[in-house]
Image 1 (cartoon, helix red, strand yellow):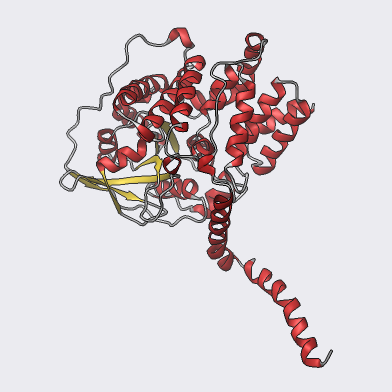
Image 2: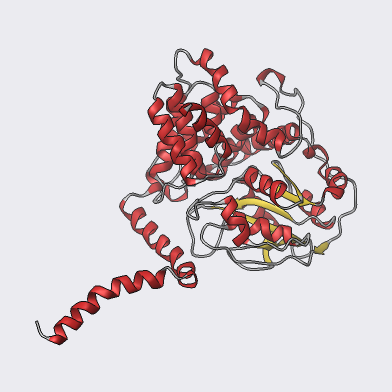
Length: 435
């Protein structure tokens, strides 16, 4: 081998190492990482289309000992349900199935005249890094109140694993309460009129919705910050971390995208403005009442809608019933939702749904349908190129424990904690099983 050949050989050997080192530079990695993830995802989807994967529930089948074990599951899930219903929102406990209100309250808004147009200023817009819409949007919302952090501050706490595909509303609320000195609340059952009322009163509001951008046909979850509106133009002004600052979104388009998350909204605020905020929220200030209102809306939409939107309505019914403690009713609603899903054209199936919303796991666990929990988790994992949704492993671990698979339960809980060391419920359950 002559000198030239040796140099070429050394160069060829060095190039991969050089490329790897360059890729590790933060400015380079931040620009390339998401593109590589997108390309990898496209290849995986071409080989194994996730939209063709369908979960088929057992439609009520349960373990023979489910009645006895259900009490144990209730205790196991107590920390989660408390975090949802009381810890982050200071409300009364959810009622049981026999305690549901016989009349559904009608949502009302504080009778204050809403201007025809409002634009809130002082919000620092920031574009999201890969799968970072939750951490970046909560930071944008807090910037309105003078908070100086950004996603470089929020993401390491909310997403210790940068590849995590989801940060839920409860996680965002708890972050605000525990890390920032501000208060936060999330509720379901919001309306466009309520969003206007909140913005008009000086409360920019986050909505959890689907992302609808040109060139993207598949359904994916997203957070967007409402910072203004114009009745004349019929649209909201949103601070969108994926699209742009001051992105105009028509009222009807937002309403349709919002439906897929049961009209969930998040408000942050200084503690001294809590009384004012609760007055604006009216009946939605109470967790139980908000779920009753959302339930009534879901039932109306079930009767009025078809296709993908009807799937969302059935799913929302299940989620609202989970919030009310009616787990049997919720499980039945989710069963129907998954049946509607199976009948959809694969191209419109929102196959990422269970990445973001975990109510079916709660409902099936609480009704002793442990195998359904496992199969639903397996279905969700099969749609992920990177299996980084820690809640999936957590719920599957709880179900495996109830079926006597202790080693499988521990493995799942360990993996959940590895994915998110701040996942308190998983840390506690793992410590209990390993004790």
